[in-house]
Image 1 (cartoon, rainbow, N blue to C red):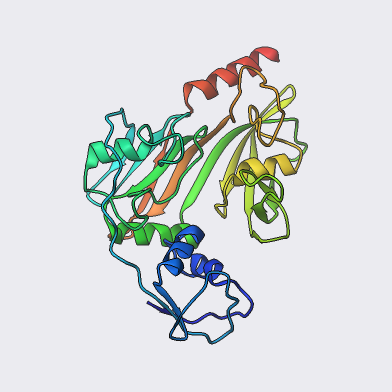
Image 2: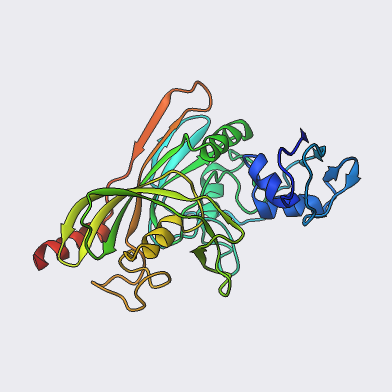
Length: 301
């Protein structure tokens, strides 16, 4: 693959993550370190600053066989065909293997259920996973069964034509019925596990929200992602003073209403099918933990 940067001063790894739909920044860095990226015919370094008109040659190696143990687990599949599936992930389930979670993740379950019917674009840690949601966020997640579908879905995710809508219970009350949060998100300067609104080394982030219901001290919101940054909804709502109920990382440090993790559910996913471009709309009803919170709020008056 040959690429020609259109701006000067951007780091090579950041440019590749922006220019190649299915490549993360860490994935770009790995390819650079493995010598798979040339800048003007010479091996490149990940922190090189690009110039307009540079020629970038990218070679993506064949996906390596996964070394992840298949694990039998219940999967709530709400849509499936020969190219992809959409499942409803429960709260508490980690999406892909990481330190401390090697055999109890969604990827382990997918490997048991589908075997080699998963795309290999994301390498050996996230086979088939097009996008992810946090461990303690419930809801819809798209999984590709082949590289063709993965590339198309990842492209839709990148150009914002894949629509994702979330339900959230947040702290505080809103005067307005709807609004937009447009604030860039980047890595937290002192806590590398967290994100924050910042102008430094950040990416554009836009969240649209609307009020579903108002309660005493809390609000049920519906949030539509225009972009898809890590922890975006959680960071944005905390930034405007309305952290998500139960989010002890970005919000109140003590659990409220019995919630010690964020009350956030990915309830709607819309995209065009990668094979024939027909519109696909998938819905996941509010899970029990979410409806139980609403019942408590209704009793509070």
